[in-house]
Length: 150
Image: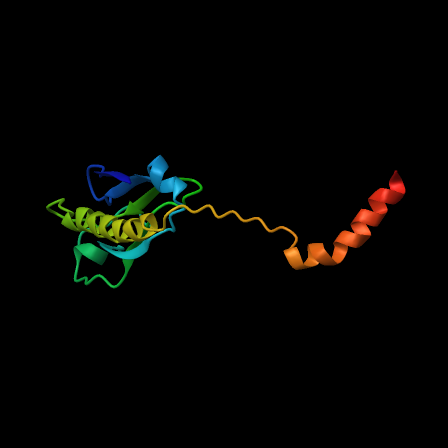
């Protein structure tokens, strides 16, 4: 699984935007991996539909995060997830929780990957024939039918 992300922010009072892509390898897709979901350490800003945050308001005022973004690996059928999240405005422009959250997602995924990989492929075949006892019972009728055909 590969995770790529970029955080961009326009100059001014605009909130930063996190864009990320998660891709499963062909091997992971062929295993039928389940999606792994977790609550990240990435806080959702108040008024998340707003692209901006003015000084003294929301996260630029007295604010304690109450909600956090959810992260998930892609479904094995698609193999890729792309998402865009708004981040809270910060003076220093640092977001260490983004990498920490993706690391937590990767670790959770790898646990499931190890468990899934332990389920080895299997092919069982069988064959049953008429039992000896039944052959003895049907043999006279079978022989008689063959003789009558001649």
